[in-house]
Length: 95
Image 1 (cartoon, rainbow, N blue to C red):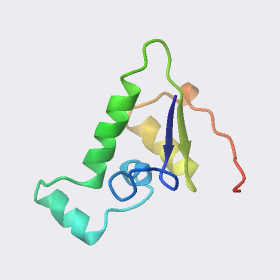
Image 2 (tube, one colour):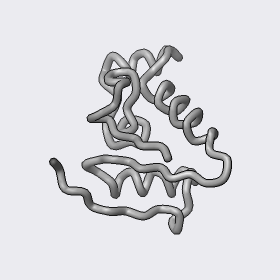
Image 3 (cartoon, rainbow, N blue to C red):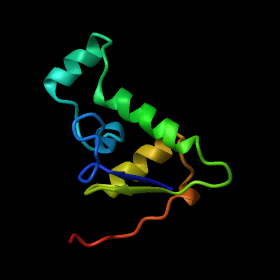
């Protein structure tokens, strides 16, 4: 199981799933780095997600916490990362 939660991550500022999935935009300085081919939050987060997901041997559950689950759902399906029937959405009330 991979849990993607930007609020409670120990990688604050280094990784952002909501940025990777298009919910949040890169900051102007991060966009400049991306334009220059430098390291960005998106690249780091993509690598982190790849490493964690490819460790699964039999099955994988990816749990994403977000204020914009519909946007992430659209992203995952449109990019072909997941099929429509592989996604289950559930509302979780804040603590």
